[in-house]
Structures are given as structure tokens and as C-alpha cells.
Image 1 (cartoon, helix red, strand yellow):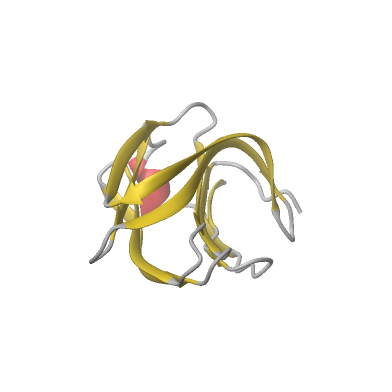
Image 2 (cartoon, rainbow, N blue to C red; image 1 turned 90 degrees about the horizontal axis):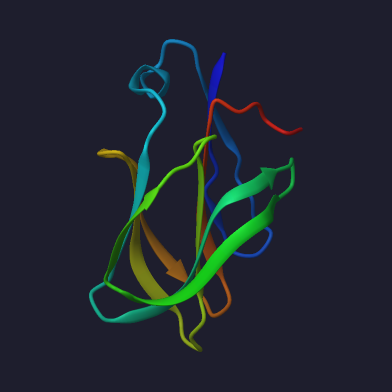
Length: 139
């Protein structure tokens, strides 16, 4: 059975796990994605800390990073990332400013949109997207 895990989160420790297991559903029919694209937009310039990882473990209560890169980016932001094998991708946006920020958070796998949400983050809060293709859940 092929499995795809999409885990949106908002704020510290607030986890919402939405398993999306597929047999004959569209994600498995599309095959393993080769790339992911992150698009962040806002009406005014916003700075966010952006963490990207393809090497992590998902447990029942958290995502444990094994390896990641972190950069401060200015919104608008549009970047494409090649996916390795296994195809997994984590992107976490964190508000590093002293004020609340609002932005649109989009993630594409190949040309297919997997996340398109408006986010409002208080200082220190974060939002993330996690994708794992054909991997069983770790718990």
C-alpha cells in the first residue's frame, strides 16, 4: 500500500496529523514527485525563517529533524527543491519578527498544489508542511 502523509501545523506544539493513505487514489497514480516548490506571498514585505528538510522522522507527537537548512527569507519567495529518494519534504516557516505577520503559504509537488493557506503568525509561531511518499507512519 502506498501512503502519503500531509501534516500541517500551526504554533508551538499544536500538531494536526492528517494521514492520507492511498491505494488507487490520485497521489499514487501520479507517482513519486521529482520536485517541490514553496511559494510565500504577502501584501507587504515580510521576513520569515524558513527551514527545509528531506531527512526527518515523523512520530506520533512530533517531527524529529535529522538534517535541515535554515535561512531567513523575504516574502515574496518562490523556490523549487529537487526531491531525493525516498521522496520526503518538510518546510517550516517561523515568524522571527516582533510583530504578527500574515502571508499566503503554498506548496506544490510537481505542478500539483498540496497546500494553499493564509497564515497569521504571532512572534515565534510557526507553520509547516510535511510530505512523505510511500512511507509507513512511524507510530
